[in-house]
Amino acid sequence: MKIKCIALDLDRTTLDSQGHLSEINRRAIESAVAAGLHVVVASGRALDSLPAGITEIRGIQYAITSNGAAVYDLRERKCLRQFKMTPESVDDILQYTGPERMRGEYTKEEQISYEAFIDGRAFAESRYVADPVRFGAMPQAISYIQATRTPIEDMRAYIQEHKSELDCIDLVVKNEDMKHKLWKNLQKNIRDVYITSSARQLLEISHRDAGKESGAAFLMEYLGLKSEELAAFGDGDNDSGLLKYAGLGFAVANASSGCRAAADQIVASNDDNGVAQGIRKILEMEKIL
Image (tube, rainbow, N blue to C red):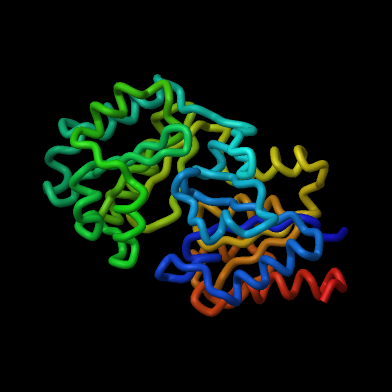
């Protein structure tokens, strides 16, 4: 069956390690659009955090955002589908990650910070926005975080105040052991949530019906297409379900082991234009080149 749609993860997949879209990847995307393929964004980013270099490409009309919590028509800036977290699950997360629960297990420097996403806007704890590297972010992510997050002094109070409005919550966890322990315990003890991770310092939590594969399934039906007609690119654990769902899944060479295992093919790394390599394969396979 012919590929008619391409879903692109952004960070560390379509974008290079500095968060930029290379000219080679841009030209490949434009070639796919010119060939009549739908090219859609499939990102953990919120709507307002999507880079203009991607959204301004003529022909990219749809975006799966916040790990599938919201799907948008970018041209009309219209939300096509959205899952809000349940207030009960938000209460449980705040209780489970409260200072009284965490005290004694980890040092102060290893305590978690929070991000929250509401209708495509991103909010984060002021101390994290001021110094993302302190909380485990890579230095090259500083400008992105500081440009896209509205700083909030007391994020726990902010999340509690807006608990009926949340697309998703991120826990920023510097300690890897703590991250995996939290992931396991939250998954076991909190209902109505989908938990994934796109970066080493993040646990990303949304409604149980979210996930990039869920967003892709909705969008394919919306476009009148089948899963076999979708090709998808990714690098992280949060892309694994999407790559399994797609008829053809590509993992970049720098992808996590889980993402690589879910892929049908491995292409070059994000810094070596793996997306362009994969798109060329698709166009050649479809005898478009």
